[in-house]
Length: 487
Image (cartoon, rainbow, N blue to C red):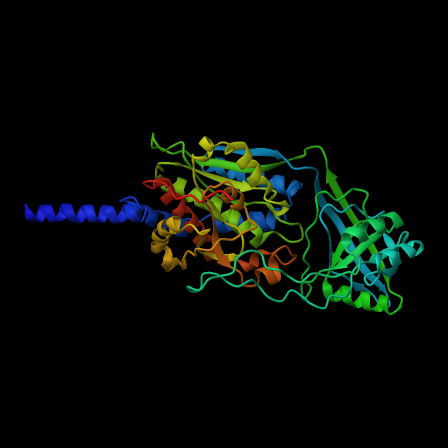
């Protein structure tokens, strides 16, 4: 009798410990099954290769992004997820790059590393001639040069003297406070700000504008503005070191001749973009209408294959859902996945989803948590906790069984500029994973170097296992994840 009482007391203590850390009694078994499925039967690398090698860059509004969205939806259907769909929101016209070529032909021949800014119009065929340098000119001086600018190839910026040469500080390495958020990086400079310069060039009838990238060693950072007028001056970004050569020569009055051709295409027929949504329905009659949402942005910029920004995150979310479905566990809450579009244009897909589904207090009460995978590359190290100490206590318990896989610690600080931010602004618990920033800001983010070689199969597997584990733990949680005040 005494032994039985002791066992009951031990059982009660263990149950209490499990509830303190937000873990159901069978947590260890399910976490082990998630790990086994994610390590032994992983689809992560195959998914990653499709996104990066076969589909490639996925600019929001482009045919490639729509191809990727349809492909992801079809994978969710193949795995037996419920309600796989493309959910539209109005984005605007699409765009794709069809051809770009920039060459120096005098004083010698050099092919230049060059990419169009997204939503730039095409050149009027092949443009050849002397480069006109205005990087050191005031607006008044540029206006006075109008005769030289008609039909000209214009070098708009000063030579680059400060290159992007470092990454943001890496969080999660020790207990010291960390700096988070996108770093302030060097940019190319011009005497006349671009917002004044480009209209001046347009009124003068310039044929094309060339500016330098501030990245090193042939790396070219390129983004774009979806509101760029279709009759604006075509705009191309050139590798910084190469631009410096031609700008220095032109500034010295040395003849520099270039040959440029740019062909782009706008898409006006469908002005929507699409989030990809699917779910595993909850089974608890009292909790099944609550949603554990996981996600990542599927879109990228257009110069490389969007491998670390953000195919790796999209694959982690997709593979996490496959794993949970494959092991056959029945979550109490619904686990839903969202692959966002329009992240690079201002978190547009996530904001549209919030406006549609969580506009009222009653609807917001149904979101248990949002878990996002975006900045950085490599393994998931933990989560940024957005100052939410109550949630951190839960997350620390969930992270503990994953430390042997390289998940180091959750940190109390937050991070901005990605798709969990609108959830936080609405007072909802949204958290983003911590990943490695080595050679991310300095090399791959938003550049022509964002290719899959930066990731390993082990890192892809691990990130999916971490995401699947946290999603399942949140879906099974007794009680709720604490919320912060809306921002």
